[in-house]
Length: 585
Image 1 (cartoon, rainbow, N blue to C red):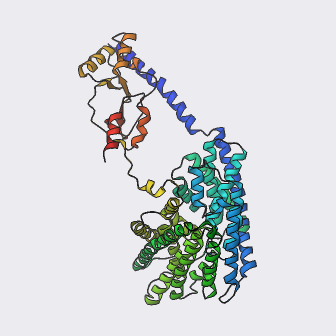
Image 2 (tube, one colour; image 1 turned 90 degrees about the horizontal axis):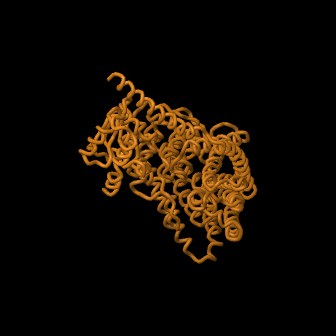
Image 3 (cartoon, rainbow, N blue to C red; image 1 turned 120 degrees about the horizontal axis):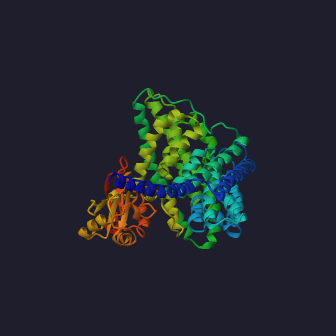
C-alpha cells in the first residue's frame, strides 16, 4: 500500500514538474524584452531628442514673431494691435487652405485620430504646417497656446521616423503617442504631466513597453529643452503652509468657481465653432482674420494681456500686480478671445489659454479674499497656481494631469493638498454640468468617432466574481484511480469535472478526455497520469470578466481560486455564465 501511494505521489510530482517548466518558459518569454522592443526603446530616446529640438525652435519662433510684429511691450492704443492679428489670421487661413489642411485645430484630437483611424500616420507636411501656422498665429497675438501644437509636432516626428524604418503597422500606431508625450513634455518642461496626459487622454491604456517608451521620450525631450531654457520651474511661489483650516474652505470656493466657469467655456466653444464651420467655404479665409481683429481690439482698448499665450501675465498675476477687478476682467476677456481664435479654425492650442484663465481666476479669488479676509495665510501666487489646475481639471477633464502639472510647473509640492481638493471639486462639478468633455465635443463636430477616455474610466468593469456559480460539478483527486473518477463522473452525468492534485493545484477535465484516458491507461492508474501537460489557467474572482473568454475553446469549465489559498475554490465559471452576466443589465 505504501509503495502504491509513493508511486502515485511520484506520478503527481512528475506531472506537476512537467507542466511548470513550460509555464515558466512562457512567462519568461513574455517578460523578457524582444529585440524589437529594445529597438523601440532606443528609438523613443531619439524621438525625444528630435522633438525637444523642434519644440525649442517652435517656442523661439513664436517669441521672435511676437517681438517683430507686436513689439517687446505691447500696450493699449497701438494700431498694430488691431492690424497685426488680422493680417496674421488672413495669412494663416491661406496657408491652411492651400498648403496645410492637416494643421487646423489644436493637435490633440488630430493625434488621437492618427492613432485610432490612420494607423499612426501624420504627414511631414502637417508637421511643417503646424509649426509655421501656429507660430505665426500665436506670435501675432491670437489667443492660443504652443503646447497642443507641440504635442502634434512630436507625434508627427515619431510617425515619420517609424515610416522611414518601415516598422509594422502596430508599431507605427504606437509611435504617435510616444512622440506626443515628447512634444508636450518639452513644451511644458514637465515630463510627468506629459506622460499622464498622453496615457490619460490619448492612449487610454498602456503596457510596460509603451510606458517605458513614453517615459524615455518625455525625459529625453525635457533634457534637451532644459539644456536651452534651464531646469528652473516655469513659475516660482513661496512654500504654502496651511496653519488655518479655513484656508481649505477658500480653496474649495476656488474649486467651485472653476467648476462653474469651465462649462461656460466649453459651451461657448461648442456653440460658436460648428456655426463658423457651417458657413460657406469662402468665409474661411476671413474667419481667422476677423477673430484676430476682435482679439486685437480687446488689446487695443485696454487689455493687451489677453493676446498670445500670456505666460508673462500669469507670472505678474501670481506676484500680486493686479487688483481683483482687473483679474476678473482678464478672466472673462481671455475666455472670449480664446473662443474667437479657436473657433475660427486658427491653428493653436487650448492648454495655455486654459492655464491663463485659471490663473487669473485663482489670483482674483486670492486677491479678493486677502482684501476682505486678511487673516487667511495663503499667498496670491498659491491661489493662482491652484486656479490653473482647477480650470485644467474642469475644462480639459484630465484630473490626474492637472494635479501633477501644477506641481511640476511650480516645483512646489507643499501646495498639493489645496490642489487636490480644489481640482476634485472643479472636476466633479464641471462633469455634472457639462457631461461631454471638450475634446469629445470637437470630435463629434468633426464627424469622427474616437474613444472617450473619460467614458472608459467611468465604465463599470465586470469581474469573474460577478459570474461565479457554486461548485456543483464532481471534484476528483489526482491520486484517485481512473476507474473511480469514471464512476464519479458517470453518477453525476456532468460533461466536465475538476481534479485537485496533492500540491493544491486544480485541473479541469472533460468527460470525453476521461473516456479516452480510460482506454489508454489501466483502470487502476492514477488520474494524474491522464492529465494533459497544459495546465488549466489560474483565475481569481477580481480578474476582469473578459480575461476568461479566450480559455473556453480549450476548457469548457474553469475553476476560480482564492488568492490567499489556491487550494480553496471560490466557484466555477463557464462560457454560458459569462454571456449571461453580459446580458444582464
